[in-house]
Image (cartoon, rainbow, N blue to C red; front, side, top):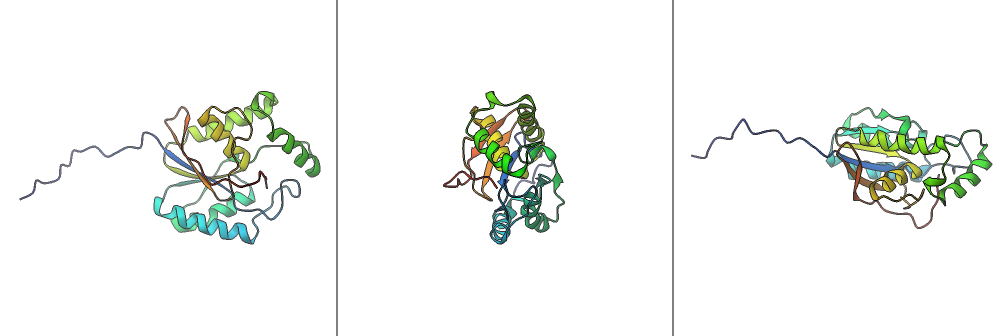
Length: 198
C-alpha cells in the first residue's frame, strides 16, 4: 500500500510574482496621428495570437492601460479566461501634455533618444509610477501596455537609464519577476527591426 498523501504540506506561494508584459497590437494610426486610436486588422489578429499563446498560463490577473489599443489587445485573452481586465492609468503610454499631435511625435522621437536623467520632474515621476504599479502586483499577471512603459520596466530591471533600451514588437511578451521591491528580467520579448511607437 502506498503512503497516503500528507495533508499538512504547505501550499506553494508565489514569492516572486511573474509579470508578462505585452505591448499592444498594431494601432490604426501612429502616435503623431491620433490621440487614442484602436487596433487595425493586423493588430486584432496579433491580439488573437498572443491570447492563444498566453491562454495555457491562466487564468491570471489581467491589467491594461486605459487606452483603446491596449484594451482591444487585452480583449481576446480576457474572453478566454472570462476575466475583466483591471484598468491602470500607471501603465499607459508616456504623457505628452500640452502638445498637439505633430509636436508630440517630434518631441517623443527626441526624448526617446535620451536618458531619464534629462527628464522633467513630471516625467521622472511618471517613470517612478510605472515601476511602482508593477512592483506592487502581488500575483502572476498579464499586463497590456506600451512601448515606453515597457522600456521603463526593462530599464528598471537591468539598471539601464536610457529611455529606450530595447524595441518591443507589437504583441511581444516580455517577462519580469518582482519580489515586491524591484523588477528582474526573466525573458525579453521579440524586438522590432525599427524603433517605431504607435
